[in-house]
Length: 346
Image (cartoon, rainbow, N blue to C red; front, side):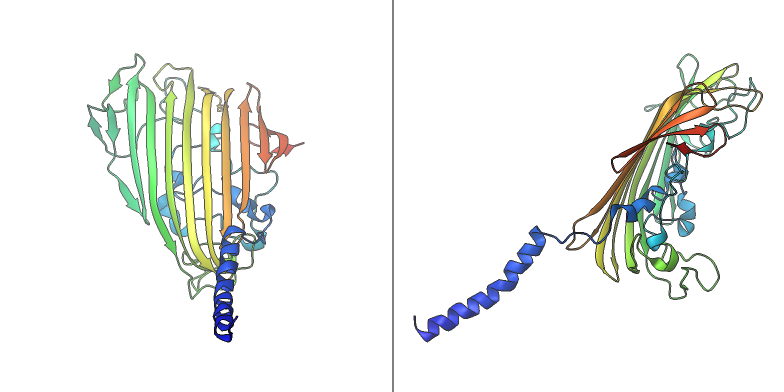
């Protein structure tokens, strides 16, 4: 082989080597440096705007986005206490801790009443629709259908005759975060309040890591659908059935590199019965609530770190709810006193 051909082959090999290495990284990403336990903070909250839905979670309304606690926040200290329920816990009304309501006033108390907006009745859909509201980059849309005890559609909520209310809601939009130059090490601004700029917990740290977030954009797509019956005067109990679903997608850059994060949240409430009591003890006596959260965090060039948790809350007529928790494949059997008390697990 001539020297000219040898030099040509040498140049080709030198040029091809980086390409082969790059392809290797794309097809064989490095193992993640994060353990699943580092992402347990994903269970402590739900996507922003969930407080504008009807669900079993205690969520943050869109109006409070600047003060919202995102699941990415908290650094290595972020997490969910072992004896806590996800998403800030169960809504008070599902624990019987929302106050009683006397017979003849079934429209009051837990899950009572209709939409808080002045909506427009649509005869074609049989629903009352609120005008969309935009807050902090998120748009909230709500509608409701009212029916009397005979199943007839009503154009507005009536405190005496409305027996069932179906409320549907969506929260969609994008929220962008950038570091706040006035933030201190504890993630608070010069004014002593939590900075919306980093919005990610102490020092703007990425959950389970010491990396600092440089920028991040979160898109949410949340929805809920709930029906409550037993609202008319004279009712002795009300029944709650519904679902909610939330998807949160974040893309950003940290001091460690580019990352993406996703979280799927949902719940299903089936046949939950709440007696209309005069003594204030209006805790659920039947039905189930199934709640789940899945979350994943990926650094570019690394394998994803993924966690999942499922909670099944069952009411059996006693003053104790049974809770089965399955987290990352590990199952625990727990109980929760109603209306108040700690979660106890075996």
